[in-house]
Length: 367
Image: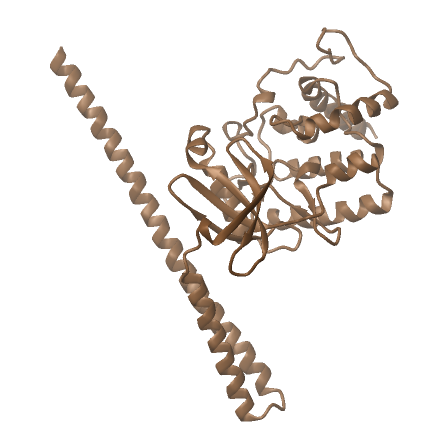
């Protein structure tokens, strides 16, 4: 019996070792493929830039000697750029400044690049916590999205690197705060202001949808403002790549993980509060309660389900439409002063969202 147990343990260890080896092989293969893909892309881009310059010079009145000088100047800049790309960026290249936010497994702080003096936002993620919480794929998706999507309406990623303990994302710093802070200060926005911010939000969401990503966490906290007051979308920690060639929706086992949404929903005719009593409030009472609690929600690690689409809450299949639902809820809050399904308790909101969404759908069908 003991020999059988020892044999079984050895087989388990061998299987585990084999699995880890296969994972390392797959990671190495992916790294090599990405490296050569990046190299080919870089060479092609260099050729295109030279071709564009030569084409412009050919149709201009610039003397031949000056043309050669401009082409050599481009080659010099390309060489300097390649040299900079080969430089290994690390945390020692930055002066760490104040912390501006904390998350479940990391923090965001201001930093100054020592060489250039530029100010950036450094997102510092602890690897062990990412592994423990099963967030590795989410972080990979966030980094890939920021690297792939070139849009003036999303936060720009400048560098990404890692050490033995942390993963670092060096991103654009936006000093204008966020839409949530703006709403806390103004309560409501004018129609023109709401149109302006919603239009920029539409451009941001459309840019990530074009690359087959779903954000899944559109809320006022993640709509940041630059120094000129323009809005940019941030925080792609819950984004999900969607392969449109094979499926049109995320399946049930790929839904959003949120501790506040684990309680089963009892969708009845009314929505009980903590004392199990029906708790209907007038619009004025809802507005006053939301204004009192909004600041506390701003520092909550759990967050609020006020902007989450009903198909996500019900853990059904969903697709890119869930981001548009969230934006609609934000537009409502901008104009009215509180989210459309706000309640005293988050779980009550979770019950109201799918119930009232079904009610509104029924009305639209009748109309």
